[in-house]
Length: 379
Image (cartoon, rainbow, N blue to C red; front, side, top):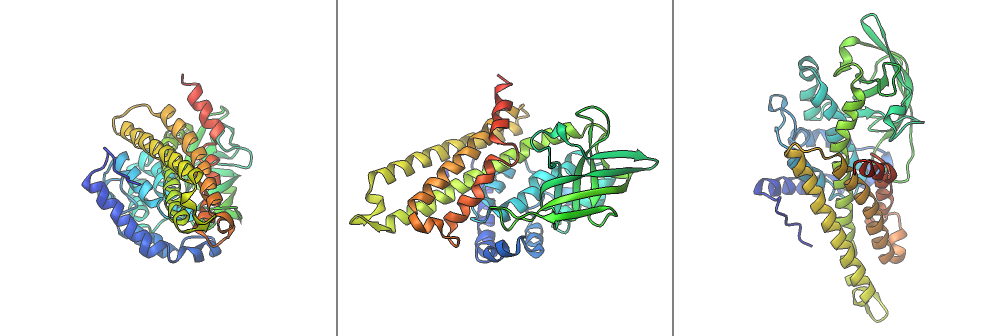
């Protein structure tokens, strides 16, 4: 299956090769142990930071590369060639979902304090938005931040927070006014009094990703920790969702690519009914169609990233992409697992892991149904 695209450049190929080497050496041989321990070792993340992979879109003055959305997509797709989605999402939350809040809304003093360490992998980030009663409905969050002199005091509980157990720096959304969208973002450091990880959550997939409940019990932070303008956090979250959803689309496409690759290899070797499974017409044709759908989704994904670089409003396109790829990856991976037969149900196989890990891509970052409503209301 060729990945050639009109969007490819020698620089993109170099980045893909660099990440492929890192995955081959640093991830695939070791990540089964990370699945058991429930998180990616910090030294692995630091090595990625030292390799310059955590600041592709950030300012050079902090160690970033000042690249654009296309380069960032190349990074996300290349990273998603790993068969361990827990590792992938640990990285992408740091690079594409949490730290962009600091990049977009942070003032000079906040960036000077944190950005170099974020890019170097010395500080790992998480973003706190989802709550037990509010996920895709960001306006429904109930956590509050109240001004008290020169401080803000945060109270509330957040749920399903990726990197929540082991992050150092959290960008937290809280209500700061009576209106549904009166939300502000705050910087909260691990260890702040009153801020605790309530529990680490056990999941069906993404086992090497630490996911947590966060509890804020009269967490007092300086007014300096307000990130961006008071009351503008809802719009910051909505803006960053576009970056997040392209990254999740890249994860889905990467899973499709890997599942098809694994399955093509398997059905050419697996003997059944007097020959390899590849001899069965239904196998060949279904894999061909799934490959066609994957290539079409990939082309659309790159088109979305290109439109970002052109400054276009891409909310409808990216919502469509997220819905499409979240459903497609489940179709592709489940079919590929089916073609592995009994081996596809064995925990040690990559296809079984991809099957478990793919399920959440139709849920997290905007459920399919929510995404389709975002598409429909823009017609």
